[in-house]
Amino acid sequence: MSSRLEGKVVLITGGGSGIGQATAIELAKLGAHLAITDVNLEGAHDTYRLCGGKPHYCGVMDVSSKADVELRVSEIVAGLGRLDHVFNCAGINPTSYPLTDTTDEYWDKLVNVNLKGIYLVTRATIPHITTPGGSYVNVSSICGLYPQAEQAVYCATKHGVIGFSKSMALELGLKGVRTNVVAPGYIDTPTNSGVVKGEEYVTRMEEGNSLGRLGTPEEVAGVVAFLMSEKAKYMNGSVVEVHGGLKMLES
Ligand code: NAD
Image (cartoon, rainbow, N blue to C red; front, side):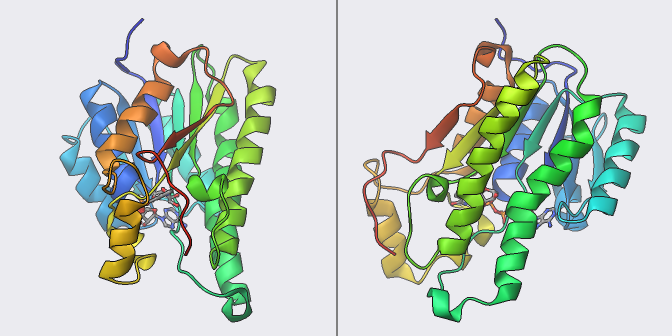
């Protein structure tokens, strides 16, 4: 069984930064043909260049917009011929707010990107995953498994991703298409700084896992690549935690 993804066509959302970008680079090394998308076109272009340009595709896609998702998916399929795997990675990392300070706009933004985005991309791509061995990898978080004070909205979206994905696994598994979830802990990505409340909090995040450091995007990317590969062909509906050995943390 191979860990290679030679010629497999993989759609990545949120591919312009952090975990999405690191995963694109890893998958390109394994021989995949990528559709790198992000709401931030500049970031997507950077990733495209880092992956070596052709045979990959690069374009803007806002996962929270049904029209955008449907248009872009049909363009990608017309260009690359089909889809084999989807990495639903686009997301907004949390800012800590007491619930009384949380706005409806914040709720809408997080739910529309982190949760509805996965629904829209999944629904639009299902008809195009027709070859055996296809799969989805959806990004949740340790906040999809464990509660976190002052991050209730983010936790709700990431818990939702797990429920949605496990149900996808049962439904799409009947067609031979697998769905798995990666649940990262504290990963050192550009916009994770939205969570960070100064040096003291970084130290607490580092000390909050038994390896004593933040994870890197590359350390998540390797797990995503494994989940897509033939080596994980009996994994369906699994949630893989990538957090260095989490200890209990308070906000
Ligand atoms: P990041 O900000 O570096 O990357 C997220 C990407 O998503 C960005 O390029 C951004 O432009 C894109 N994006 C945002 N809204 C979008 C939209 N509407 N449509 C398309 N793209 C959009 O963040 P990251 O840390 O790499 O996070 C990637 C995923 O991992 C997110 O779902 C995040 O919640 C999750 N996650 C991150 C961590 C962490 O510690 N960094 C931990 C657990 C889960």
